[in-house]
Length: 64
Image (cartoon, rainbow, N blue to C red; front, side, top):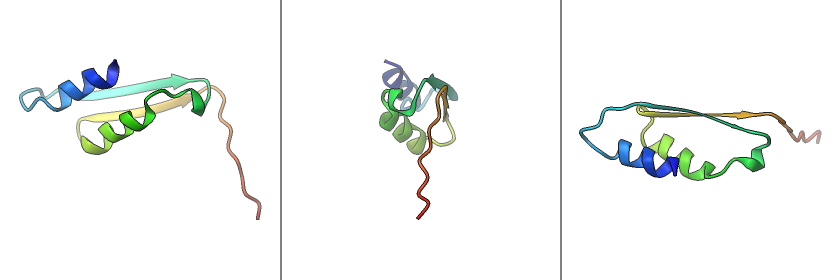
């Protein structure tokens, strides 16, 4: 639901609201609608910021 509300705000030329979303999840795989949120942030970089916070961060390293 949040992406629809954010899109309505951002696409309204009269609305000057800025959005800062802090989105907390346990793991990267738990992030819902990440692609849609990233697309909104890319389309409206001066109006929306999205920050992802993870409880369990796992990074794969390639030692080759």
